[in-house]
Image (cartoon, rainbow, N blue to C red; front, side, top):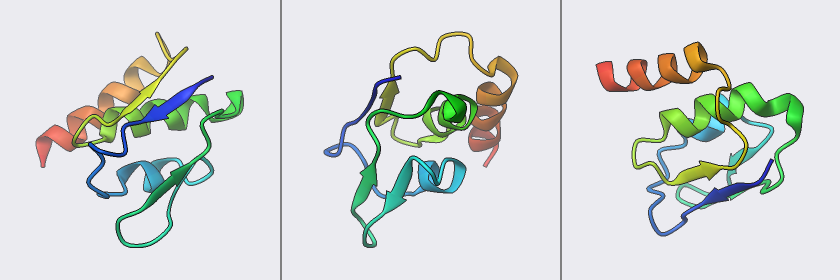
Length: 81
């Protein structure tokens, strides 16, 4: 699975690091580091992290149809706030 984060768009909200800590991490208060080749076993967490990004800075190839309830639920929870 290939992962891309638009670091110009990223605002450092760290929702991705909270939901998928094995893939994303905050290096300082505003600097995101991530593994661009996420392991397959992290697929569901990655889908939730992509859906939860408030500025939609994260894209991932190969997530179609993954965790439709999980990813949608994360987005709905984010929208509810």
